Length: 107
Image (tube, rainbow, N blue to C red):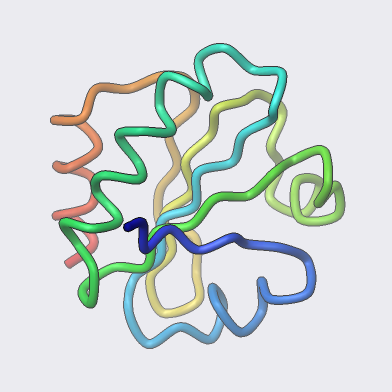
């Protein structure tokens, strides 16, 4: 069972900007091949870090306003938030180990 949160324009403020724990958002698109390779890793880590970090998925095509506001020009893009502020981002496919390291840096 996944603990992956679906991030949308309707819940971005409450789930991300007002979150009391760090948030990682996988910004992706249905048509993106590398996004499909990253998705199972992100989902797995959502379970591993459950309760410590919120990990969510954002469909950039369905949430264009957030994509524009966050400057997402390429997918996959991972956004890392702490205390309501973007503190890091990663563009392109990354390894599970690199993602774990970036998540641990949030804690």
